[in-house]
Length: 141
Image (tube, one colour):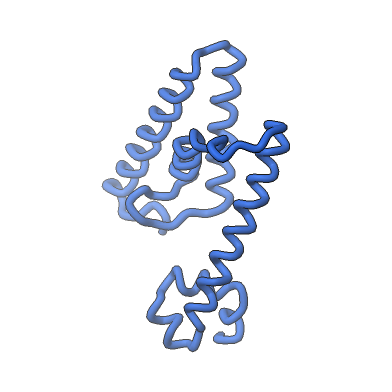
């Protein structure tokens, strides 16, 4: 089992249970470096894609994306106050929010109402998650 988690999956083992990962012999510092390097690569790719989309380089170009990012993750099923999420759930959240935002743009709503829609979707997702927790425990299993 140790051989399975000593590669790139070691980050998953550390995130799930740090103490168990240490006891199985996973080098936590090396796994953190791998994780940060991978996230840096992803951020660089996202920056190149945004630059290509805008046809310009600007340091503040992506400042307004924080609300949309948080909304997509929450709608995808990840709890704001700690919890687990899935890539598929986050992808569903991104697609749903993109559809709502594109619909509001096509209907010529002001940007303010797009932010309001994102906020309402976040509140609805948190409320639904809280309802599921009260009804029967953790909805993630």
